[in-house]
Length: 322
Image: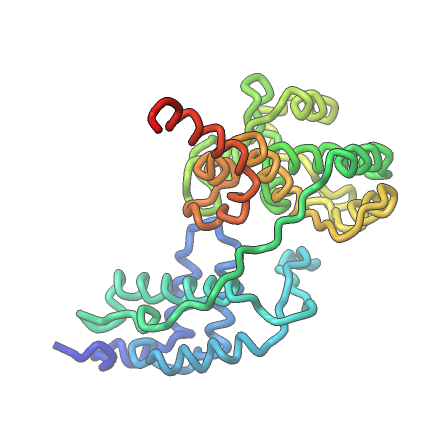
């Protein structure tokens, strides 16, 4: 039997770049960042035989990743290829861990397709993950929420109010909402499917539907095309390029300025939804299910907001027992 990192016949010529090309061609998942992250590994380790890559190689590459400026997705170019722009600061511990997960998935695929020696163990298993912060929790106060929604209603883009209202009441990511098509929306049931035309899959493959409150459904009705249930049109389509989503950054920024709100990003609409749920007594499991998280640790940041709910629970549990 070959040693864990000893190249086998036929596997030795398979560089990480070779295997990555095959992997991405076969990839059927909904994580759009997977392509960018795997191609980053091609840039860093692409010329090395996959089966010969060691934990030390990955450690060195991770150090390079940590030292580079972070990049943020900025839409598609004229050829519908993703655009990534640099942003201030380096990659966070959570982001570095996502890169490691992407590489681990590549090794798993290679092993399943027998592109590495029998008995091969992924070197990513020997890499210590970076410490992840609990993450920022910025949510709108009642006054801020009312001011923002009022400003959105006055926006030059008629659908900004709908977009922000959906973000605040569903906790969906901006990318999920911008990818929503009319055929994904069931106004009669008050549901919208994420990433597919039925409520069965999401980015991470788990079942999830967005629950559309009556106010959201009514606003959607205003823009719904004829035969919406069969329409492949994007709900938030671009005016000039209907096949692509609307570029929302400027409209949202203008609304924020008009509302006098600072230090609030669109993604914080998601935090607002989760924070409101926590304050209303929702469990972390319910919040995770609504946001589409597989792991409760992703919503631990909201735990301190439902203290009153937990206090009422413990009071009921121990009433008359102490």
